[in-house]
Image (tube, rainbow, N blue to C red):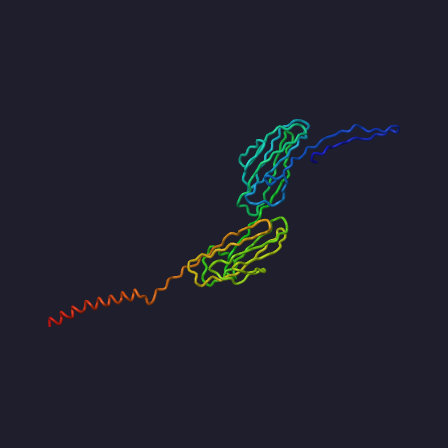
Length: 310
């Protein structure tokens, strides 16, 4: 029961008369109601996806059905993965919980709200919230509201023919690398997804799977995904033969009709090739010539002195 009124009366027949007894009534308490909105709107978004950085407003509505005036205490722990912004109606925030203490007249309702901001680093977590209400006679838990957050697409790199992620590891000239992008549809509905990935500098494109189209240095994939469905695409490149100390970097972009994501960046340094000594260097030849000339110049006076002595 949730605020319904219980009613009862009886019928009596004694053979001569038929009676209806008086009716007795008993109200039942109304369970407090929890709702969640995007700040500045009035549409309940329970179950809908929310984004990093968005402001959400949570409301709690209590109706006094005790038959007398009460002092109601409402406590609400802010959802994990959010940051507190503000509370109305004198709500106080301490240790992650918002508290209100209000007098509520018989048959009157009280609504209180607070605002939070979704943290920037959410990645597929589910925001959950419910409140507790005590009116001096009853303890209530409100309904729970939930909001999923999008899962950020993931980028990985491996040496072709292997499955070990080598992000941050050195790669050599001529090696084949495979780049992989994984996206999960958490929009709450079917989504048309587009993935684009620019081939890394210092590499040459080889191939792409899943119908990826290569044009102008960029690979593009398109697919319709069901809610909750994951999709992984990949492409192969070959490291340029002339690399020497350059860092190979790669990120992808994903659009699902509601959001545009940039994946994490993967990087791979390349070793510095040793420099070969120069041959036929004019400077070295000149130095050698000067040394020989100097030696010859020193030898001439010695030879003259020897002839004189003779």
